[in-house]
Length: 327
Image 1: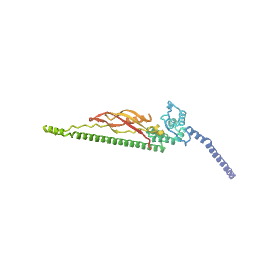
Image 2: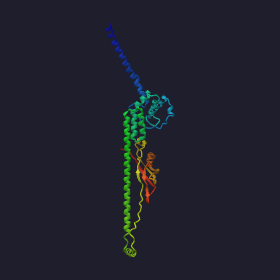
Image 3: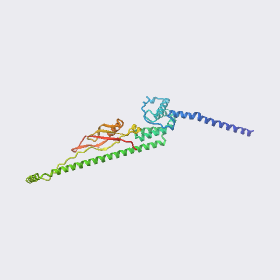
């Protein structure tokens, strides 16, 4: 009897297990998977769709600190739909989700959304690094670190940012060295030309006609010899400003995005301390696109001031700045 009872239990147990498996499969296809797809649609699309992190001119909501969990999640979903994943500052999906997690640690909606969109947000931060918008890239990397501190992608992004900053410093130093070499070459050429002209004038003045030479010789013979221990007066040469610090203008994000190149001609004054002031745009192509970055960079340049008679003086200069995309 006991054996028959055990034999009857086994088919029943198998049937129960089979029913549970079928229920789990049905739950996946009918509940869990549609829920995940709906959540991804709220978060800005399918995971295979790249997420843009470009800044959008949208006014941030008022008094974010006073929002409850539902309001924060609603603002986050709205930002994801408008592709404001990491930017602009204070009005992006990551900041709303992180704020929601501050108020309710472990919130499943915020946690899942941050995890699902992390790879694509990281791509946006990398774009900011490649565009050399280093301050914005640093801010976005900090947001990614708050969302997932242990993710190795954050370490990679920080390394790339540091490498790009070092590369920019190297390029600026090379440009400064080239500028100094050009100025030194121009100064040497100007000094050689002035010396040649002076020598030619002296030779011409030292070759009078025969009657003049005889009269000059008689007059010289009749005059007492001039003392020879008096030094000849020295002329103090004048010099032009020499750049000592060059700052490379930042390539605007908008121009980087549209692959636009151009140039700006700026005029400015170098004072007696070597500082730059009065920077003005004289001409530009295209207009207004590169003006601000050019002026910001020129205002940070430093010079060895120009001199006249050995004294430092102000000098007016003009400079054409090229904005070229790296190949």
